[in-house]
Image (cartoon, rainbow, N blue to C red):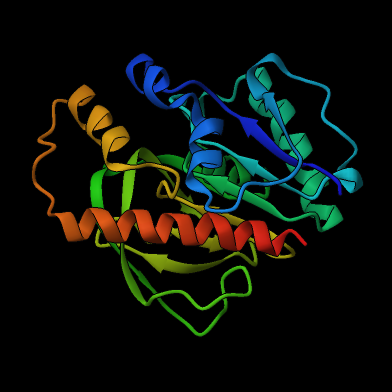
Length: 228
């Protein structure tokens, strides 16, 4: 079977990395069923990306960088995104990954309001299936972002939103998807991010945390199944 490619778009905080590895490791730990074959590439070194048709699927991780910086490695990644999207290879972007897909396909990313940090309520809308699965219409998720896709690319459809973010799940057409929230986070990772931003990490109850992690696992598993 062809490998799943995880593109690491940056590094997490040192404390989180010591406990759980980097963004790519968060994803692997977040899956209930691990991929038999996967490859991790660091986007920031402008790697030679594999031939698209020899990949099971592609996941682009979060990052502490801003899409609006438009660095050389981001341009290199956007060129690869266009190839993956055009080929119809399943593609999922998480947070920064979601935003850079939107930018690559003609949308606009920028700072949006006060961003979102912590557990947020997400509500799906419309009757579309997400990764060929029915999702809960309302669920909790972990979020940590200051930028958003403020203008979707032509033809893209928002499938879920929160009170402060209209584009939490986006279908970009073909087999390309984006999540503004972090399905790969757990409560300990989220607490590190909240502490780094000097925000209260004790505001959430156990049921909200459990639902965020249950749905995060379900979403990642659903995408892996989608990469058949």
